[in-house]
Image (cartoon, rainbow, N blue to C red; front, side, top):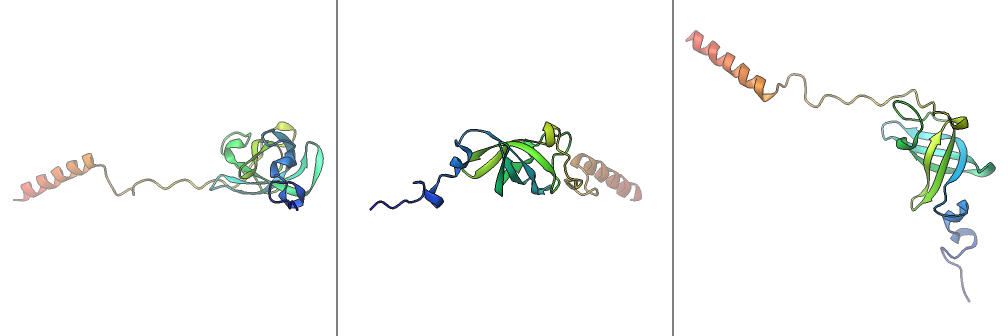
Amino acid sequence: MDEGGLGKGGDRGEEPGSLLGGQQQSMHGAGHCKWFNVRMGFGFISMTSRGGTPVDPPMDVFVHQSKLHMEGFRSLREGEPLEFTFQWSPRGLESVQVTGPGGGPCSGSERRQKPKPPALPQRWKPKGDRIHLDEQILDAITVED
C-alpha cells in the first residue's frame, strides 16, 4: 500500500510551486500591502488576483524595499493597491518587481525611517584638536608659573 507523503501530490503534499504552474516562472499578481516595516525595509503583499484570476483566500507575497518602483525613500502604506510580478523561492512567494496600479510608481508610506544619530557625541573632538587643546593648556600653565 503506497501512502502519499510530502511532495507526492494530494491535498497537503502538493509542491507549493505548483500553485504557480512552474516553480521558476514569474507570474503577474495584484493586491494590496498587508503590512510593511519601514525600519526593516520589508513586508507582505496580500495577493487578491493572479494573472487576472481572483485568489480566494488571498495569498501572502514577501516584498523587500529594493523591489519597489518609486523615487526616493522606498516604502509601502498599509492597504496601498499594488501590481507586481512574483515567483516561488525556497522561502515561499517573493515579489520580483512591485508597482502601483497601471505600472505607475508606488505611493509609499508617510512614515519615514528615523535619521541615524551621529557616530560620536558632539563633545568629542578628533585627536588633532585634542593635541591643539593640550598645547593651549600647556601654554596657559607655563604662563601662570
